[in-house]
Length: 130
Image (cartoon, rainbow, N blue to C red; front, side):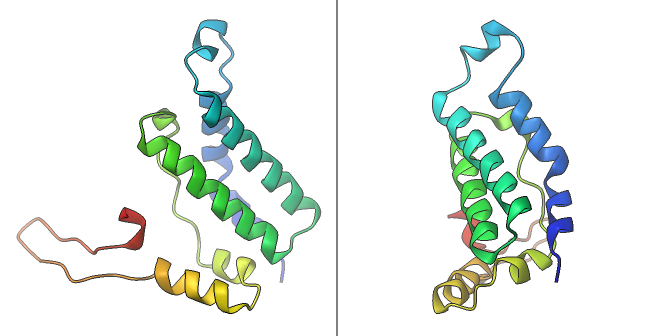
């Protein structure tokens, strides 16, 4: 099955991230942390590699790169790119290499905890919050 349309989920966001990580103006370039530029370049390389060889481990590389970029964004760098958009469920199928490690990672990612339901407040303790 061809999962390349899943990349459409990231198209606009990748463009924004590139604008933040590689600004056109010289004075803005000095304010961009090197680690953000490196992670954005790694992510772009992973996306390009995937388009050439759409194998499950390449989808996993993109997911790992997204997590690395998000880790930098949480610290305050690159936040103007906005959060990573929601990904369609087909990403799971695309990244599934049928290994126990993948199944375990998926199980952790889908974990939810107890919560409370108030008038306006509700939450689920998703693993991403940690």
